[in-house]
Amino acid sequence: MSQAPDWSAGSLPGDASATAATPATDSPRPPGIPADALGIQALDLEAQGIARRPDGKVVFVEGALPGEWVEVQVTRRKNQWEAAELRTLHRASPLRVVPRCPHFGLHAGACGGCKMQHLEPLAQVAIKQRVLEDNLWRLGKVRPQQVLRPIAGPAWGYRWRARLSVRYVAKKGEVLIGFHERKSRYVADMDSCAVLPPHVSALLRPLRGLLMGMDARETCPQIELACGDGVTALVLRHLEPLSDADRQRLRDFAREHADAAVQWWLQPKGPDSVHRLDADDGTPELSYGLPEFGLVMPFRPTDFTQVNPHINRVLVARALRLLQAGRDERVIDWFCGLGNFTLPLATQAGAVLGIEGSEALVARSRENWQRNQARRGGLAPTTFVARNLFEMTPAQLVADGVADRWLVDPPREGAFALAKALADLHQAALAGAQVTPTPTGEPWRPPRRIVYVSCNPATLARDAGLLVHQAGYRCTAAGVVNMFPHTAHVESIAVFDRLDEC
Image 1 (tube, rainbow, N blue to C red):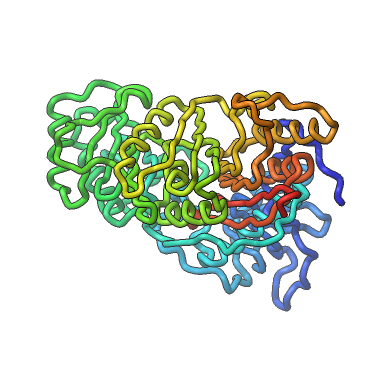
Image 2 (image 1 turned 180 degrees about the horizontal axis):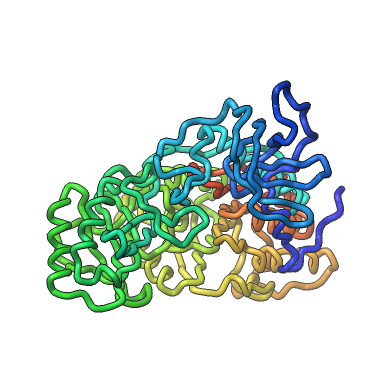
């Protein structure tokens, strides 16, 4: 068995987590390729091509794909690596495609929202799967017994959530709305976006005209987009009170674009200040559905919800199939948010505990549970608790009681404290230590199965290493979830079973 790494919280190496795959041995230089051209061997997590110079120095090449031979322009030099941009493409990969969006590319002013539009979508998924497997092995010394079929969906028009920057450019005499330029804090000059829903992309130019005509055009830095089923919520951040005329302009815009069901929200200060412009504007409640479970999930536009609703529906269904919770079992949903997994679990399990760090999201999850109690068959008894999950201890884990199965869905930071507490309890049991009974008086025991949904393969790998090498689990399955097509963002799902259950 490979030696387990050091699992201290600060031990995650940043340079290792940035590499998608260890570059393979250089392939022979094809005839006619210039001597100074580089052969691209892999992609990193920023979708940059990885090459090696004859002296072994690694070169990260933006815009290049594996299998290509390119000439580059170096933009940064370090002792062991260089950063560069593709300048001449001598031999293209068969997986290279023409980007759909005119704002994508390496040109000045290019939008930085996507990084992989030049790569065939199915190849993007394959590369992300390789990223996941490489991270699990290099950082966690873990190999899943089964590689799950990737979860993938529409490659375009999928992004139902976005934070669009707004900037009034006096020299141009216009307002720009969109994502930032590549490697820049400037706002890209864009009038369409292929990854936003088509009806939202069609609003970009009209929104620019709207903001340009407002009194507050210089003090509105952002519009946050949150699409629901049948409504398009736009949250306008404004740094000074809006005039009555500006408020009317927003209403007129919504009326002119009634086909998009625009619903204006205003944010004068922090996220807690967000409120509807007009509560009686006639638009539907902002919500999304999980039809497979007969659930409707109301939310506020600043609440965390998944960017891609098509993938989210499939992800929730697969997570529950993998978890296999029974009517006689108790389940804990760690990092439960507004109940995206918790409520579906309550349609299958006997009892559910949802734990989340945000008091606001816990309140929303309780409201959503109550709202959906009327569904046919009802929902299992469910408790929601607000707690800082980055400060979990073995004692707190025992106090939460016995659960047959866990669902873990942490932010990018992962669930280190949770995995560490579980590992500490397992090590104490191996040493023969007596564990304090649970509040009900029964002996505490670890969950038989854990389904871990991750948005960061590096922290998943770190936590997987803890679970496998120190907590008594085996990684029985893992696979990627392509939540963000055309970006280098890798989401995944992994299953861990107790060794005595395998």
